[in-house]
Image (tube, rainbow, N blue to C red; front, side, top):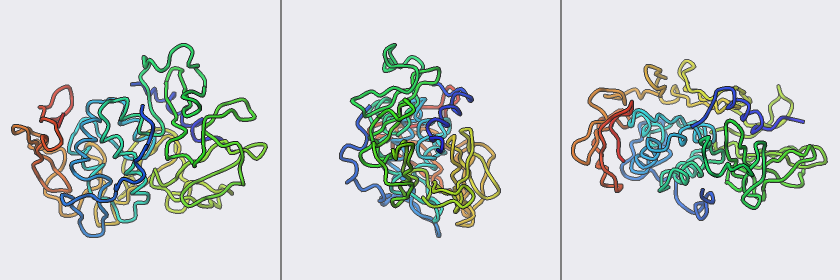
Length: 340
């Protein structure tokens, strides 16, 4: 029997010391998330970003205000979140993506939910894996330190030294999943029966003892495809045709590829696909071949009244924070200026 992603992921989070809701996607499935809007910049051989510029600003405003949103996002949907450089954050969630990046619309649903949230709990609760603060009141003494089912079976709580919530009814999991106990007496986001190890589109499903699904998830959320890996001998989430495993949350450059590890799988943003390069000078990113600024330039992320100067899609632009109901706040405490 294969180990579950969540079990391994929790061990990774414990090793690196990660510390520091709403019903996920209620009514969100019908929302158009692949329309980046008229303000999007789409250079040749790229695809629009996950969010429009305005939605990207809203997401990053939440990321700057909610210290656990970045980690929850990286673990859940393999999108790097720079919570210190506003333009860098906006670029990752709203800037153009390599044409061969998979799962655009699926990933965008999670990010859109977090962008539209009005509280930190609401924003982090949009992710299938929600990292909690050690003093989160949801982890009361009766919540259990090991994996315990809560919210009428809708969520799996881990309330040990690195608390988290796994949202079983989140769109990341196959339809019909809830928190149940397996034959090993451990709790999982799962379904009671299973037809066999298989891919249903981008959805990975595999069975445990007694023909029970003890886990399964949507590979597309992290930019993966679902398919058979000949080296493993079973179906899995694939990066460039192979299941690439890793063990610690990280983002970095591998030649011309920006690679992010979600604690279990390695996901790739192929900068080469549009003639770009991977730049690790500050926060890793894909450089566009025709860019005239970077998110880390000293004259970027500066306030002018309610407006902020951004480096977006490699070009300097001004965005009025008031457009999304916010104001521009000068940088402090290691964070640049940002909309808040």
